[in-house]
Image (cartoon, rainbow, N blue to C red):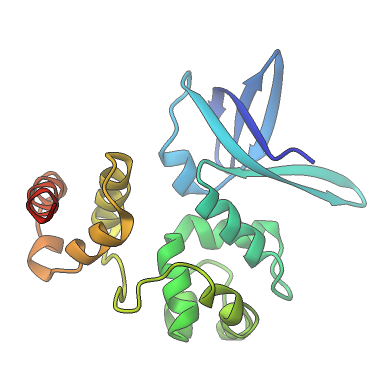
Length: 195
């Protein structure tokens, strides 16, 4: 199996990227979340999972192990295939998925494309025990409110701040309603004072 591929992003398309490594271009199906963090021409490490079917052999991959692990968990759920799992990961952050599973929030899960109440119920039922073993802050609650908060969370984690600390800070309503640049600045100020 291919655990990861390190190479140059040669192209970003609707539901996949092409990663070039030693003259080979690997088509890797991925989520919008990963695609949004990549740039054509940059070198990236993509964690991969090879899915073998009777009539196909496909690579699925993500730029973080967190997203990779969530993908692997989702495809173990009855009736969820790789494409469904990508749809879920493209529509909500892994922390939100974990929160929904732990808190039995079926309604929130149905916001993902192709996920009805039955499928959401299966996700909660089949993954609840597995998710409990993950490092989720007991009082973390819903980590982000909107796309701006999600972007700010990713940006601050990439700057080296601890995810759990950032999540707690971004839960403040006054922060969540700020423009994204102000949100990041205020979070940086607050997190630096905390240290």
